[in-house]
Length: 284
Ligand SMILES: C[S@@+](CC[C@H](N)C(=O)[O-])C[C@H]1O[C@@H](n2cnc3c(N)ncnc32)[C@H](O)[C@@H]1O
Image (cartoon, rainbow, N blue to C red; front, side, top):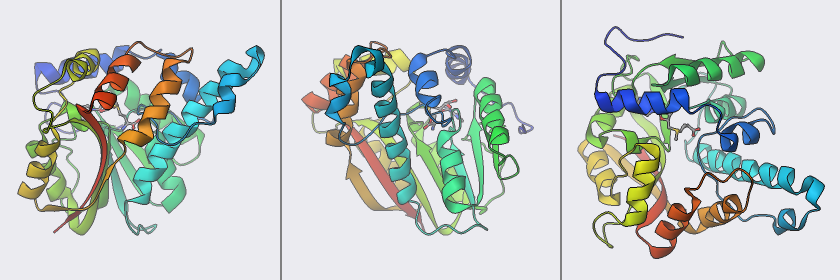
């Protein structure tokens, strides 16, 4: 594990976010799903569910629902990787806010290239490095205790960067200034995130509940495009994944690993105060 000379956790807010991820280790929705195939995610899922899992016999029903939720989470990560553009084995990628490392390990398996992940949770960084070691890819996939707003990585070193459900923890102008410095000309940035709907206006109660639950600050949709444009990041693809993520939340709300936040996501998506977006942008 490597870090930077400046303190990784610079504000009380960042300390509280790190504390959340350092102490919230045993959440079965992350551990039991990760145990399905050893890819540990801390994000949500997309795609149609296989309804037969809900009708499965009692002895297998729970495990089949877990496997189905995990399949949808990995499908979300695959979709993100589909948008990174052509990546060769010589390229270097950055997973900004890398959690327990599942998306980084998938990226390395797909592209055969070096991936660095950064997280402000020391626990997660150690866990993710252990996963990379167990898979025999620790020389190519490395996780660091670093702040994605000040990564310490060399300027212009990245062909692609992604944020998979991490942007709600940071100021977007600061984040995209950092990414614009790390990406080479023509490099790609891909983001999957929940964002508030400017059209419905203000912050709905359901969105506020999600913020409160995760100690985060969900940005309005407009904030993404302003911050991207201000930092020479030009969108090439914007996909509204809201309809594709609702089945995941419906299934999760009926599962043994529901955490209680499912109703807020379902309300927010159904009432239209919240979207699940994929944004892919080129560095110019
Ligand atoms: C919801 S998890 C997503 C994890 C991962 N991207 C995934 O898809 O499984 C949010 C992650 O963002 C990280 N994070 C939050 N603020 C950060 C910051 N300023 N710098 C680096 N990581 C940060 C947290 O430590 C956590 O790993």
